[in-house]
Amino acid sequence: MRTTFFFDLDGTLLPLHMDLFLKLYYGGIKKSGIFDTISEEKGSEIFEKAIIAMLGNDGRASNREVFFETVESFSGVGEKTLTPIMNAFYENEFIKARQSTRTSKRVGLVIKELKKKGYRLVLATNPLFPRIATDQRIEWAGLRREDFEYVSYYDNSSFCKPNPEYFKEILNHLSLRADECYIVGNDVRDDMSAVALGFSGFLVLEHIIGDIKKVPECVQGDYSDLLEFAASLPQI
Image 1 (cartoon, rainbow, N blue to C red):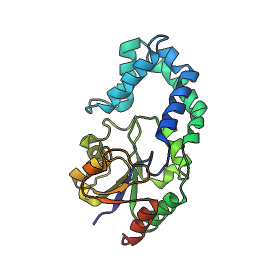
Image 2: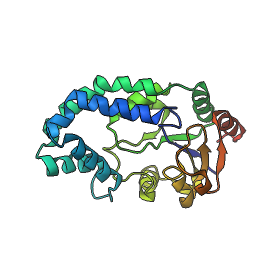
Image 3: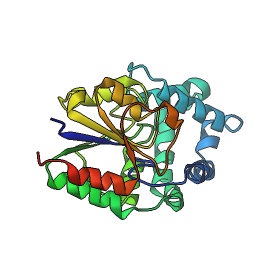
Image 4: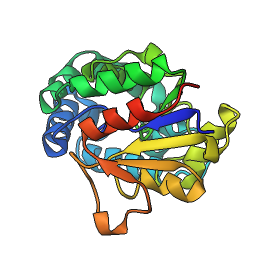
């Protein structure tokens, strides 16, 4: 029996306009001085390289460690210098990115229904952000960090989606098997890649990313369909 739901965040539990989110996010980073602190000439380029390094992390270290190691290797600027500036950004400027999102009442109802039935809930958002940033986005979705048994952050993860090791790392941490889990997400590649491991998939179509022709066998639908799906499930 499947007892656990893995949920993506951006575009799934948190409806958002991705292009606007990225514009506000990177605009805020530039304004905060993070790029200039890394390098006045190549700060944004080095920041991007650090993100790419996290996406390609092979498990040798946490994503956080990979991020700061990459920045330092290209700039000489270390974690101790950069962390206070980044924390200040996430505590202040980052809130403006909320303009790119909205709250869906149906999302809250889905979570409430599953919790009522005893399902374990995991927030399987791609772990490129620190805790402070992800927890804010959970709140923007009208949810609480406490709604989830486990949340992936860049400091507790050493892989990223769609690498299957990302999902395996969480499964191992929670002593779960893939055939005990559902994956709910809006990204054909990143989220539905878990289906190959044995997850049962639900593809959210309202903010779909990727080629739907390449999606593996899974349930598909909008937020109303997801709520109906949750309501149809048995009590744990």
